Image (tube, rainbow, N blue to C red; front, top):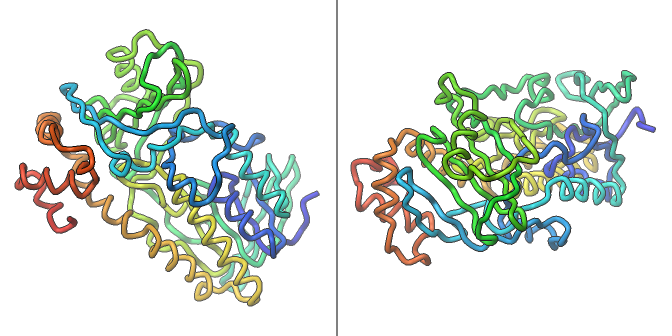
Length: 391
């Protein structure tokens, strides 16, 4: 049974929400709600995560991992390929996860720590009193309920309604949103240890990806900047990409959705409320990857929520410790990568060909973000002049 009052209520049982629940549940009475009937389904990302990033939080379980990825390739529009280091490949290189299993295990971990976890429970509003968020209204198994809480954590994704109800603007401009489509495909022959990225007009303002998912299978998808979609849907771009490069593949699942590639939310706290994960715009603006930042944000929000409950003070002043902590942890990287994205999304195919050609022959140990940008600025100072001050 769902109780009418908790110390902490968390809306959304993705990695951010589940890890926040697990972090706080050892000391506090925690409720974690999920609107869908299955945690982890449908899959909402390409499922890549860095090895080092994941291992900061967990010892990876074999059942979570579809493939271990040790390298990546970037393909220019003319087909030139460059092998790059794990750092450049970013949060997508290391492991390709089975997100359905991974997300459910995180929720189970939160439950073992003491959290109440309920599915088919949709937030329908917030309880506001004296300028504070004091709980949420939900629709649970067909019944309307009010659940009071000392702290509410909004982990309800890119379209965070909880944030909007609290007066925090989470609107995304088309320039800051990737519209994505992905197939899980079989009958594809790929190196099992390599993730591939394709840039150019096949995925305007974004990129296409090919992530191995075991023998003869892969997640193959792409993201197109919403401002560059034109009259085509992302699935049309994806089908054209597959016809050109993987015509023999057979799709067994299809997933579509949006990913923020924006600056982080200007504020992620209010009286009684914290935003985390996609709701806080914590995804990497360059890659759209967000699992590691979601886990870190979940941990930090759970820690600060516990402090607020102990102090019996959930004011914005207290919860601001969370915002200071995530900005110190990964905020500067988000700011830098947004500026890089701002340059690269507007390059032509001819420009991208020039840049990728310039990286050929560079030793792989120099193919870090700093090494790549430094070399490209040297070779193409006018094209990338706006990046010079970042490196």
